[in-house]
Length: 239
Image 1 (tube, rainbow, N blue to C red):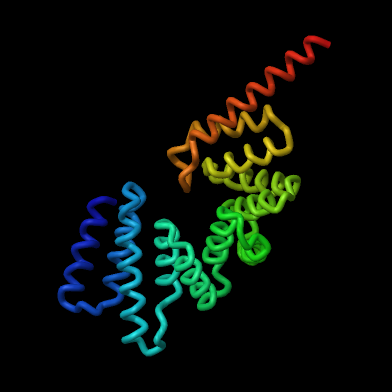
Image 2: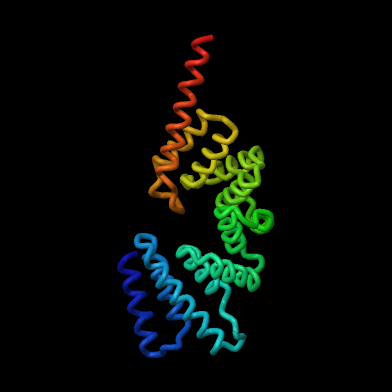
């Protein structure tokens, strides 16, 4: 993969040198930086700049005066990663305006709303639209469950997240993010033993998580729940 990225970058760079206003080459350069950013987050800023360049060129030179939906989507993702949320939201809304039935686009905007605990009703509708297209997609079910958690619908959240984990298990890999979400719901429902199980499952595979998770917070939750369990047992023994 590393050699493939290097070759793709050389090809894109050569194309840009030949034709500086070649939007596709700038988009490819952005995709490459996006991949590199998985190991070095500073690359997201460069990726965002390249995606923006591709969009601007296409809007100026293209017949439709608008870039393809995926240009706006990748731009929005990169901008969200560098915490420029206002610009990211605008790009993602443009993506959905251009391609209103793409479940990936709908889910992504819904999920980042849930992460910021904003526009939760809008997020709910976006993800329901994604699930209409792919009702067994574990990522969309996870998003839907997490939105229910944020809305305070804990039983519904538990049901959706459990289904998400089940579908993921059929593919032989459960994103630790799903385990984390399940742990949070069980903790909220005072199912301490099950919450501990899922927090520990999260930590066991945390390097494979699809997004950064707060290890210090998870460890603090484990310590808190273990302390509560010990106190409960002590109280029961004294009866």
